[in-house]
Image (tube, rainbow, N blue to C red):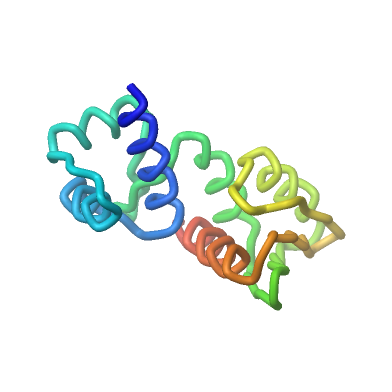
Length: 143
């Protein structure tokens, strides 16, 4: 059970950090992290975790679907400065986007502040901010 939980935690991070299109790619990523698993095992994990494929063919976590919908509909641009991620949105939508980001409980995101058309997400490090920027940009472009 513990091994499965660790593997599923790794899958969660991989899917959020990279554009994974196939279970085979997911197996390869897991093996690179030291997990010994088969495609059948990953297939069960995908089903257990409720992973979904977006129209563009990229896996996304079920809990990220609301976030993906909000980002793809309202986000215009994503920028980063050190440990800060600036999410530019359509006017009047930033508070909804910030709420979706907060609800997603993203790793290393300490919190967000919303204005009218801008969300500021504070990460716990520059590296984490880079990952957050990539995730937000990936989900925002999935239309």
